[in-house]
Length: 89
Image 1: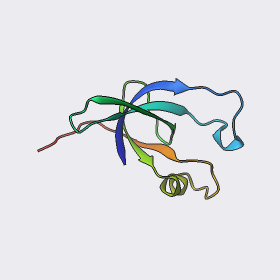
Image 2: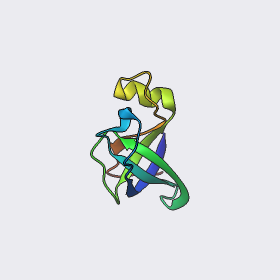
Image 3: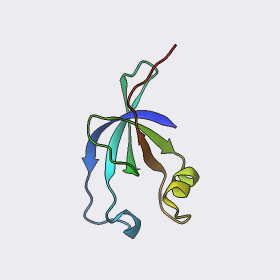
Image 4: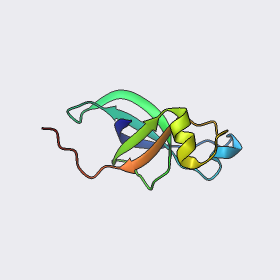
């Protein structure tokens, strides 16, 4: 899983039918200090996440497809949670 910050919304007028009605968001990976790394990925949203929020991303196709319940979905990255707080000891 990846900890990231939503930095934008991705809009596509022509897309695979699986993505119709699904929100696609641009996510910047965060390092262990919570700083943005500049390593971006595009992820579908399984939760109601928005720009500026810290999120938890599954970046492995089979796990993402299991969450959405479609074993043939053309999916790799999926936002599965909105993070309230991170504490590192």
